Image 1 (cartoon, helix red, strand yellow):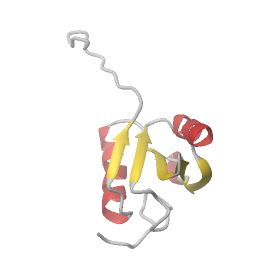
Image 2: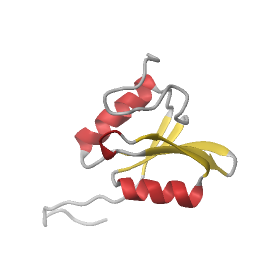
Image 3: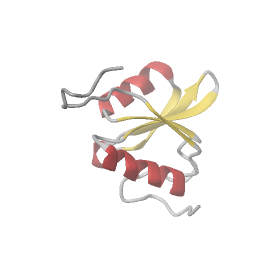
Image 4: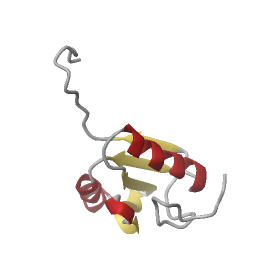
Length: 106
């Protein structure tokens, strides 16, 4: 793992991001999660509106990070988090949808 930070999409320094990151597409959802559930919150990123926060949930260090819309976007952020910031787990949270009526729900 390289430890030269920040990356083009993330302004954090190495060590500012927890090993576990909750990721959502919507930056407002990420801010709401940080404000509602985390203590001792520090914002580590605002590059391109993809805000990221680190704090503590029940004493455990946790980060929440926005990734924008679509698979390419989350792919970029996940790659950088895993390869440059020491992240071990990403948990994607939020909604998903499709425009094809032939797809069955469930």
